[in-house]
Length: 153
Figure (cartoon, rainbow, N blue to C red):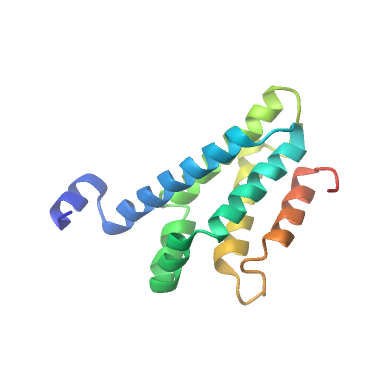
């Protein structure tokens, strides 16, 4: 695809890549959501854990981060970008679905809870090597379960 086409349709290379990452992540999340049984907080933890593990194990995403670390982190984690706002929307939809069905009572408003879950995942999966947590999806699951007030596994 030529630069002119990219800028006409997406504004920049970063917007294009962000759109690709967001759509791929939404597809993976939708598949996991459809395949995950259970109810309430336990179901939410299971969906988010499976999604986090899929992201942490995605070879293309890992290669992108390895090859273009700063750009990749900006694309994936910027609130002004494509990926984070879309992931917050999708996570909020999943939480709201459980709440509307009467199976879950969020401890805070859904938007705040969804943003916290997305930001935690970003830190644990992509960002925080300095704190020694990058890739530690087991600890991420425990923290998300506590945040969602899920029963202990």
